[in-house]
Image (cartoon, rainbow, N blue to C red; front, side, top):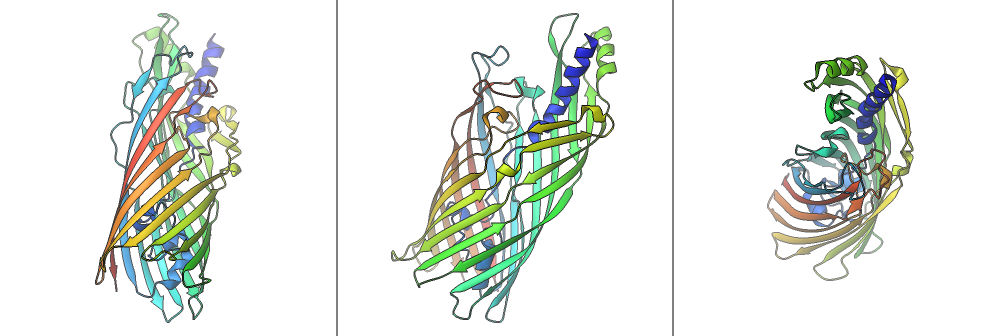
Length: 427
């Protein structure tokens, strides 16, 4: 019995790392104007956020500009337990704790001569926060997961003298950080009750890696534009510490047994295989006073085939787990409509396919196919620019269908609201 108890605790402590590191959590909200157009911006790319969406667009910007801002993101999430599951049946209404997440962005561009533009961008291409309100029955899978990234990219773009063709590129330096928190449950042999016996908190260092980004923008006629960009895949190797803290049950004999079987606090290493972004867009001004664009975006999450968790003090408990994520596409449509010399109105829509297999749907991330709609305004007068956007994102219901590898089955329902704001100064 003690051997079986040891195995259950060891595997449960590892499960938080297994679920958290494999989540699909790309962010495209790196500029309020682009967000207002549903992220369809690869063939427009006419403000400094082109460094993210299509770096070639920098070349057509013949004034220097400073642009900065962010996106406030709030979630509404509900979990309903599977009525056929002995553990989650009858459970519902557990929500995320109230949090507003604000991924920032900032850019500066400087033109040189008539053909070159240099820029530097700071943005957040990936991120995740799922913090569940307690009491939460899924706390043995995850109570809180917080994954942060920040990228810095210096970039340069060149265009032909007639402005019909532009190319650009630059290196990307990305840093990332992880915090994960969960409890471990076990059956108290003396009372017959399932109780919390330990808390596991995993925190990584800020680890980093380098990638690159290229783009091209072609204007075959005065009313049509074609844009394409590629942000390379990247792998970040993480070093961290898994801190295991025992939770007293009130039974001294049981607690003593638990204390002898818990893994020790120890260093941990793992890796995240971030996917690439590949944008292709086509835009037109053939309809007077309207600028309309459609984009297709590809993310190669299929490169994330396995996850290796290395425990350095007790390597016998290390884990190599198959993930089998899928590559995905999103489809984006946007429009910009000038209503005066100072004001623009923008509209956008998107459909985004999720990469997550049903077996991995969990409290860490219950990803689902998403549909979104956006509305924004832009004000530009003299050297000043103000862009603001409201973006509503609806996730289709996602159930585990009894396939959860965490043995936590049910259905997740998620909606998100995003407000993006950018301020700019042209010089």
